[in-house]
Amino acid sequence: MTNSPSRNGLHEFRRGWLPLLACGVGLGLGLSPIQPYASGIMASALHDAYGWPRAEILASLMVTPVALVLLSRRIGRLIDRIGPRKVAIGSTIGLGLAQLVLAAAASHLVTFFIAYALLAAVSIGTLPMTYAKLINGWFHDARGLALGLALAFTGLSGAIFPFLLTNMITRFGWRGGYVTLAVLPLCIALPVLLAWLREAPGTVNQDPVPGGKPSESHSAEVKAVLAGYRFRALAVASFALSFGVSGLLPNLYPILLEHGMPAAAVAGALAAMAISVTIGRILSGWLLDLMWAPFVAALLILPAAAAIALLLAPAATGWMITAAVVMLGLIAGAEFDLVAFMTAGYFGKQHFSELYSIQYAAFGVAAGFAPAIYGAIRDHDGNFAPAIALSVALLALSVVIYFTLGRYPDAEDERGDLHALVAADPTLAAIEGNVP
Image 1 (cartoon, rainbow, N blue to C red):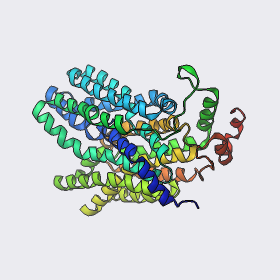
Image 2 (cartoon, one colour):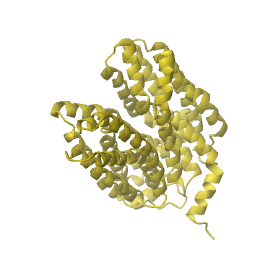
Image 3 (cartoon, one colour):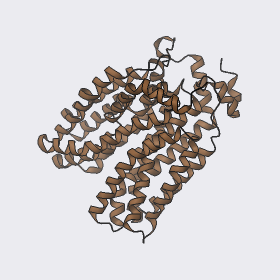
Image 4 (cartoon, one colour):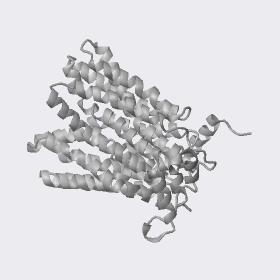
C-alpha cells in the first residue's frame, strides 16, 4: 500500500530535519536578510560617522543584482555539479571574511563600494538557490513546507538584527556592526553547516567533463528549457511580483506617514508586517504541498493586491491600512517559496540550481532597482499613488502569467527530464531532437 502524502511528509521531516535546520541557519545568517534588515542600519552608522549621503551608501544595494546577473548561472551550475554543501560552506566563509574587509576598508566611499562588490561576489552561494537544491533532495511530499520553514529563518534574523546591530554600533561604532555581521556566519552558521548540512543520497550530479564545463547533453537540456515559454513566463511573473512588492516595502514608512498615521502607529504596522513575512513563508509552503502552485499564488497575491489598493483610498482607516500592510507582508514572505517550488515542479531537480539561479536573478534585479524607481515616482508626482497603483497592476499581472503555465510535467522519477517537459510544452519539440 502506498503511504499517504502526509505520512510520507512526516517521514521526510524525520529523516531530513537536521539538514533542514542547517539550511535555515545558513539562510538566516547568509546574504538574504542582510540587505533588507541590516543595510539601512549600517548606512545610518556610516552617514553619522563620515557624512556620506544615504542615497550614495544605499546605492551599494544595486551591486548585488548586478552580481546575480553576471554570476548566478555559473554558481547555479556549480551547485548542480558539485553539490550545495560545498558551495554553501565556501560562500559562508566568503561572506564572513568579506564583512571583515568592510570593517577594515570602508572608511572611504570608493573602498566601501569595492568591498561591497567583493561581498556580493563571494556570498551569492548563501542565497536560497543553494539551499533550495538541498531541500529538494530531502523533501518531496513536504517540499513546500520545508522551503517555507527554512526561509522563515530570514524573518527571525530580521527580528534580531536591528537590536543586535544597534547595540554593537553604540558600543563599538560602525566597524563593530560589520564585525558582528562577520561573526554570525563564521562562528554560528559555519559550524552548523559543517555538522549537519548533508545532501540526500544520490542527489549530486557529478559531471564527468573535466574543468567544470557542462557536457553537450547538459547544455542542450538547459538550452531547451530556456527556450520554452514556461521558463520565460515564470521569469516575467517573478520579475513583476518582486518589483511590485520590493518597490513598496522600503517606502512603507513614508507612505503610511503621508496617509496621516502617527509615527507610533506606523511602527506598529511595520512590526505586524515583519511577523506576517514569517507567517507568509510557512503558510505558502504548506499550501504548495496541497494545491497547484499558480492557484496558491492567486490565493495569496490577489487579496494582497486588493488590500494594497486600500492605500489609494484617502478615507482608509488606520486598521484598514494596517491590514493592507500585513497582507503585503504575507506576499513578501511567500514570493521565494512560490518561485522555488514552481522551478522544481515545472523543470525538475536535475538542473534545478542553474535554472533557479536565473529565476532568482530576475527576482533580484527587480528587488534591487524597484525601491529607487518608486522613490523617483514619488519625487516626480509628489505622492506615492502612482507607485501603489503600479504595484497592484504588477501583482495581478503575475497571477495571470502563473495561470498560463499549465499543469506540472509528468515525470516518473521526479527529475522533470527534457522529454517530460516536451510532452507538456510543445514549444520545446523542435529542440528535442538535439538532446541525446
